[in-house]
Length: 406
Ligand code: GLA
Image 1 (cartoon, rainbow, N blue to C red):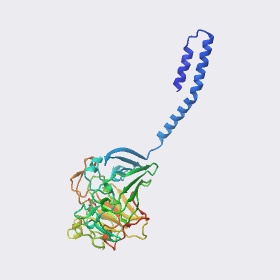
Image 2 (image 1 turned 30 degrees about the vertical axis):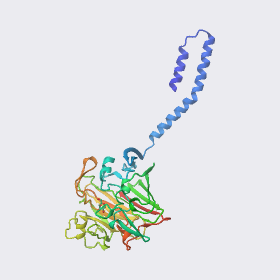
Image 3 (image 1 turned 60 degrees about the vertical axis):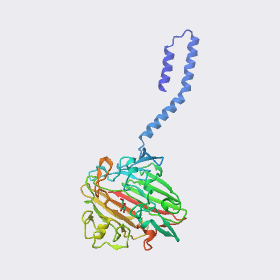
Image 4 (image 1 turned 180 degrees about the horizontal axis):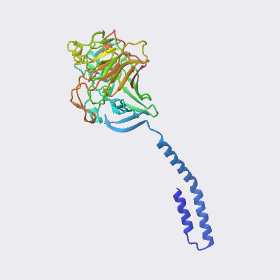
């Protein structure tokens, strides 16, 4: 704009005037033009100031295109906090695709398993980073009875129903709403229709991921239904605190649990047992590899390592309390898991066998990642002594889990 005004001035000063009259007339035209253009000049200057201001405002959440699934657009959201922790989450399956946290020297590395692109997740995935639902872990034979009515779910794991069935919440496109701020969050919603995978009731689900200032990923799950149903939501992130440099056998684990659920050979719980004196006692810190090959322990044999549910010691029902602490000496990384849930599934990556090549061309070998899935007990719909997983119309399912990096 300043440039246009300057050109008007130059035109006036260089003009060869024939008469005083033309000179005065032109002077009048130029001054009028100048006055007319001045306000717009000021507005555009103000606009450019605003652009400069907004450019300097820090962005804590951004979005890029990740691909298409079920003919719907899929995006990848990048959440960053002021300490430089970065979480990438896609609305396909609500998957945490990457989580970069500092080591003891402040070096950021991605400590979760997954794929570089959406096509990896679409082809085949052992639930890397995903939201699991409607029911985390197994329901025996895919059958249960609720209010006298028998339901038959899809079976996808040696005759049992696992992680919500053939197309669970890990394989659907969620609606995403990002919220900007120093604690950026991503709200994901999904309507699971009555009859989906055999479950009763239209279930409205909301999952909010928040990256907090204290380097935690907080996951808040909420759901309501229009018919009685069963529900057990969790997240299936595979952690490796070395950032993929070694397997997880040298990680140290503490589980705040005096009891666990032994299983049959199809991994359905058969009861509740004290951990004391067994390879399942993580009440004090133990290396994961220390007792994982204890051939004498039938439970280790059934799980192919650890693939069991621990019953958390709770002083109060439903409050957010410490469930697990995972640390790794060479990186100095430490993760605490807090939850409102009554139990945690510790799965030591026993089905990883080198057949998957993940992010950055890393081959995911045997036990190269582990899951700490907060949950209600597997097969609760068939086991009356377990805490109920029934959700009725008018009730709200609400649980919180926090993965905190220290
Ligand atoms: C869960 C189960 C395991 C296995 C993994 C996915 O944690 O308990 O048995 O199915 O998911 O591979």
